Length: 359
Image (cartoon, rainbow, N blue to C red; front, side, top):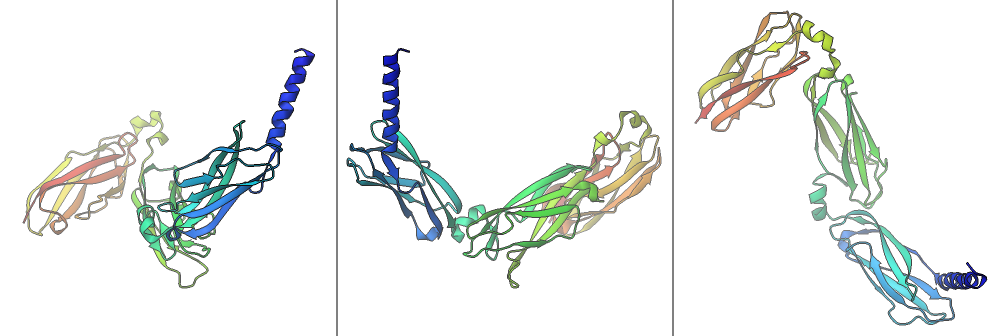
């Protein structure tokens, strides 16, 4: 680069820096604070002063989302004059905190300035019903039943539930949980008006003695500072299944094996609200004892007696159950009865109870 070209570069650079310095922003952020959704669209604005010796102008203003509309001074901004960028935030259907930006493009250089806008919307009940359909006083909940699904024995899992403070006061939710297999925590611990919090549930199956379906009730109080605060019971449900990876391949030949000679129990026609008993065999065709961990069904029309304990190699046990037809709709039915054992290859097998309920 020659001395002349280098000098030209410096002139352009300093000229560019000088252009940037000609505008002085009086505000670069706007905080709406906390307001109710019913208050409707909220107005805000920021200003800047032209400190240069030449007029300047605003090319365009671009909000970061469709929830915000913007307007600005469209005439030339003379030296010493103040220009305004105005914006309107629409809170309808948008409960909770918001943090948006408005990009302002200035002058012939099209210089960009980012203005930040923020606030918190306290949602109205009708809006909150879709995202937070359950309530306990000022606290609204995303769910009341929290399904975990299948989880292998010996493992742990986190489950999360969003909550929302619809009041105009800060609240401190609390809870009662009597089962040590589940830990509960809330982030943040205190919820300001319009705040969204997250309830975290940590399920640790090594601390749960039961296998199969389990349910953990948690009694949630909306505000521990209010002795009359409303409560709501939450339920975490899961199905704890054996973990076949815990069994060593070398031990498979020396373990018990679950075999069901009869995988379908046909009760035929069941008339009216009658009750029908049924039986099926559980066979261990392995060389070592087989432990029956649990026998269950998730259909309330069927009750099954547990056959807990060990079945010696080559042995068998009879399981008994009963159907109560009053809990069934008319027509064909098929109800699975699950048998859970310590068989490393097939820890869970099903017997199907079938029939037709007639009026």
